[in-house]
Length: 451
Ligand code: HEM
Image 1: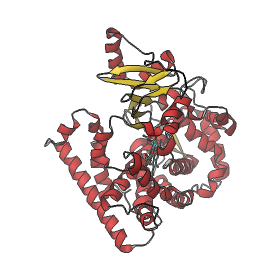
Image 2: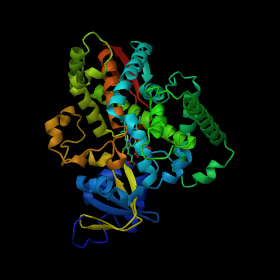
Image 3: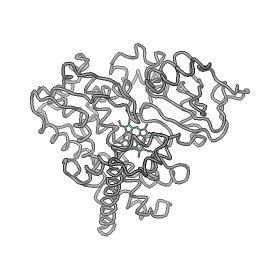
Image 4: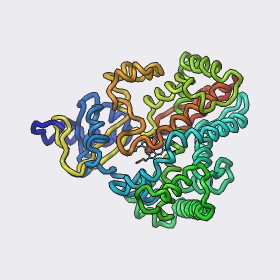
């Protein structure tokens, strides 16, 4: 924060005619809208949506102020109360002391030694995926990546096999997550009580999931052994006395479900866009193949020890998450008045930081639409401000899934791209579709070519 007196406003689109058009554009095409605001109005701008005053913060230092330096002045934004009806008070949605306590309990499950232990499951899952694929086959790579990452989170978290389609957990997850989009609607509370078939499916899915997870938890408590998975970690950490009272089964449930949800479609989204970008950029693809052919010389799956020998694979993923960040924006609400540069953000206002717009800022990423993994060499990274790139957010809410996701992304991409080249199916439309994650509106139909 700066010491001089800040202005209580920030530049931004004003006027009724413009306002109407702006609201329509922001709803129809929020990605272009945010990118346009950043270009036209600079590092901080403000606009109204209904009765809300929204501040869009688009400078790396200010993003750091919001997410890291003054994080305790910002609570999670609008959708939180609605999402809580689904996810409960897990890490993703809890705040303050509860969040700090839960984070302390879950953290050991994401310790790098633990994560290293998950690598063999990631290798095995990518082997199974590769064995299912047929040369010349056309398939939608989006559900395929979901199945893969859901299976991995299920195995590493619950030691449960959720990969097979007819598995109970997988079905319950699908039914429950299917309804997630509806929570964004303002009348969601009312909708939830209506006897509509999809609402009933949601409640049934959620209930089934609750029951399954509670049974697993109870079984684990009786068994008392460390299975080396995240669930054991959540349960064991309470006994080892990390300065917090034991979690109630309900809390463990919220936590397990949160990590489950947060941990599979994010990585699947990142991988889907990576396959698409590689199919459009043969030079980068050739370079990736050269690295993989050398490191995985006999076509074996990539394992933990390979990670440090796969720098280009890592850069490909990082660049894909720059262009298509799975989490494309974060919304917070200011608790107290807050100064960002010369501007005052009044208490209660909504604050948005947008990975999609920042990652396209030509000040940090010249020719931003161009896919170039070399932007992520150690030198290039060191030359940029820290929060010009933040696919995993920042501050105390960051990182817990980052090591897991990065290792998973690299190992899956390496194993599959060593054996397969994916081509976008001719004529398949690709349209970016920003939901809570950055989706592809029509899925991602691709042709598998054996290498
Ligand atoms: C490419 C993959 C991933 C991306 C882009 C991603 C992105 C993010 C972002 C941006 C946040 C911060 C949300 C906020 O501040 O409001 C977050 C939080 C979180 N992520 Fe991920 N994530 C990924 C993978 C994972 C995985 C694999 C797991 C677990 C296995 C995971 C678990 C979590 C959890 C539990 C939180 C809440 C942390 C907290 O609030 O303390 N994520 N993630």
